[in-house]
Image (cartoon, rainbow, N blue to C red; front, side):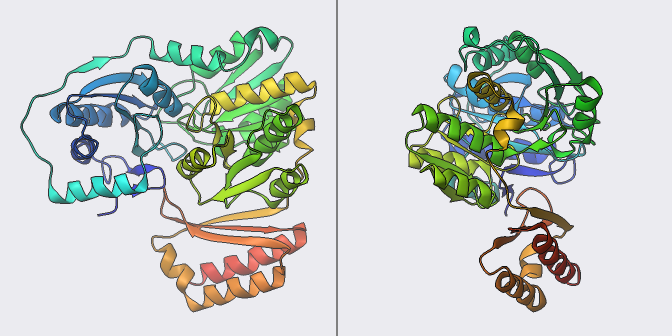
Length: 440
């Protein structure tokens, strides 16, 4: 049985991800972590299936002897914070992140606030196969008092509030009808900004629908309409963010990492001179960092892999192109609101807007395609597709890269082509897309 993908267990709610599965998964996780008699924290996003799965998860943990503390609707990274703040043994989030409203998911965090390792997840799956034990004392279930307020205070405290004043800054904040809906506008207003709220109703029926970090047209239009200085777009559970400049240009995760890394290097605070990113990050980022003596350490896709590599490397900054950014000095996991606050802090200290700072990070053209596919390995292993990839790599001749892989969170095959010119990128992407589509 393989349940865990790159970001927890995820699938269509009440079909793949049922209350029965959530309960069994909770008991198996508690047993694997040896948490009987301990404490766990649960948070969720706004999806309509969230309370159902939260209740099942809490019941399973309590049945395993774990005391459960419910944080309610709260961004995923807040659970990482609350685990440490409450001295809990582990935590869980009920969310499918950027997936559509009909999906949901469960992801677990250890006592350090980090996502569980692949080895631990496989051990939990094995316990599910074998069947979990029953009997023993039951845990209790409580609500956490002021969870959102405490998390907001942590975010505000991540910078020197007295040294930054966003008065006069007009920000459009798109919360994707998700978990950041109340906290993000509050934190940014606390820093003095004028906030124009977009999709800030906690509406699980509309979460991520044509809004947020995966659909930037809404925030881009609002930035133009209101003459805003910046647009800030979160995904449904708030662990990632993308920015839109006053001109409407996107500032992605690679550029955000580059802005912060160059800023820290210039001030002598980047130690070691290493940034952690995934194989998806742009060659342009790697090149500009190298020019400043900064090494880019690449990992497989997934912010869990980034977080683990940050620990091994002893590095301070890492992330993904999609906007999962980890500021290891503040949090062990990706945090969209924290990222937005830290980028605004950098712009304030530097005296230039973020769009101007992003110009320092010239990116290679990229083309991304996704294909509905239940057997990505089979398609990529087909002779026609393998030959097309080999031919494309020869055509690129070191002037770009090809990344073809199965999604770890959805039944999709993902293709990324990167090249030094737009024309070359488009030609290679078209040829590979045709080969893949012929073998689906």
